[in-house]
Image (tube, rainbow, N blue to C red; front, side, top):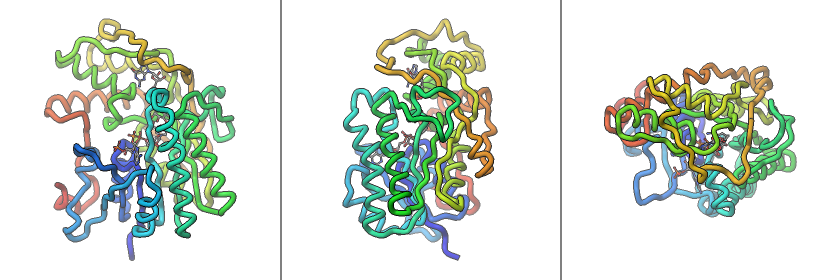
Length: 347
Ligand code: NAP
Ligand code: F7E
């Protein structure tokens, strides 16, 4: 039997790395698009990568960028994926206020470029769009698939555009496109400038005596934080469903940034109030005050259920950041590869 073939944009990101692991573990041939960089930008997937000259390699990386449609067409034509996961994005909400046009180019128009390329070359594939709870913005919580979109940032508006493009290509051209509307999900591989990871890294550094203070913005914002490996499993389930549809993935529990702070510092035996200082540069011109998701549809139709609660998530992230400092690694943490037979191919 030939392996199912998937293409992941954004494979070097938090979710891309977990999704690549999941799909390789399920026997897929996985292709990822990476951006050329003057330094290595593959630390989250290095443990999965193997020299393509070796036998039985199932992970392949290709240089490309969502800004260049010709390259996207060439890659889709060459790879002929059966499943495309569009995870690439300028994903930082605060930064999107400083770079709104770039964010719209990548996070918004990038999706259109991919879908139009798929349509133009007549590729038959299933398409996952990484939609976001940021699209709900100021809509009252709990938010589900029927909640109105009221985005509050250039990132949120770009994601809303992509959401509608994915739906339009489903309706107009009968493409199998799904929107996974994911609420915040975190892990030891979370980018270090997102608030949870910023906090857990600071906890580790303060505990080790390397730093004294952590500077943050709005502590009152409420988020629904889940555990990233569970969310990529939900993405895969959406693409394996009988019909294309849109699904919210969330835990259903909201907590404030202050709650997260207290849990993380307390777990390390520290008092957060002695170490946290306010810096207004981390405030946003418009804030999403509270988002809490209702994932009932994913639970009943996909059998998807998150298991890791916030206190466990905090422990996982703080432990990982403390270990990272102990072993002297950079800012990225990856586990050993998971699927049998891979050991020989680790570089
Ligand atoms: P992330 O860690 O920021 O990863 C983003 C990925 O996109 C990276 O691989 C990045 O490459 C790539 N990328 C950025 N610009 C690109 C471009 N112009 N062309 C090609 N690739 C580009 O994000 P994440 O947390 O894994 O999230 C994955 C997706 O889900 C994103 O679309 C995000 O907006 C969305 N989302 C995330 C969450 C969440 O809580 N994590 C919730 C809802 C939706 P480099 O490594 O080279 O920068
Ligand atoms: O902020 C507050 C900040 O940047 C969370 C992305 O993955 O999830 C993420 O977007 C909250 C906000 O995530 C700091 O104001 C306080 O209210 O970790 P964040 P986000 O904006 O919720 C959604 C679902 C996505 O789709 C996005 O791609 O924390 N906050 N002080 C801070 N936030 C940051 N980053 N840094 C601070 O110092």
